[in-house]
Amino acid sequence: MKRFTFHLLTVTALLLAGLAFIPEASAHTQLQSAKHSAMPTPQTIRQQIVDKLTLRLQRISVTNGFQTELGARPIEDEPVAEQFEDLPAVGIYDLDNEVDQTTLDEGLVPNELPIQVRFFVAREETPANVRIYIADVKKAIITHEATGERDPTFGGLLTTILPTNDGKIRDKETFQVDAGAVGFVAKFFTQPFNDYE
Image (cartoon, rainbow, N blue to C red):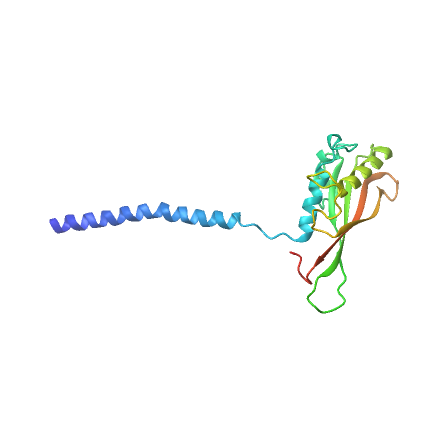
């Protein structure tokens, strides 16, 4: 009987120890999972440019010295016009990067990334308003997202930005204004085949 009681107590102790271990193991697993999800995901230079540009466009408001409230409208990464139910709305498009590497060395090479900001407007929008939107977008592109100062380097991410074009986008048949666009080139240096630095 004593032997049976001893075995019963031993088995019970082991079961209790196992139960006590399970939450601890679970907590450890949750902690490890949280560490992995909290680790920063590397961002490409393109994504960093788009993120900073989004913040700059969101500043477009009368209280920040602009003429419109375009920054309070939807701002999307490469949308199509039909994606928006409510206009005006803004889209950011990074286009084909030009890399000027003339040798096979591993030094830094210059990049020229064309970017276009498009804002889609309702059919009844006046051409005068579209011109004001163009001016506000141009001002936002060059304005630091936090300080409000002119900043062509995007906080040191770029060497500079250069304006390329701006204007109205029209229906080819009716010449109705559907959108406006502002284009610029973001210039920066990277190692060959490395979009993360």
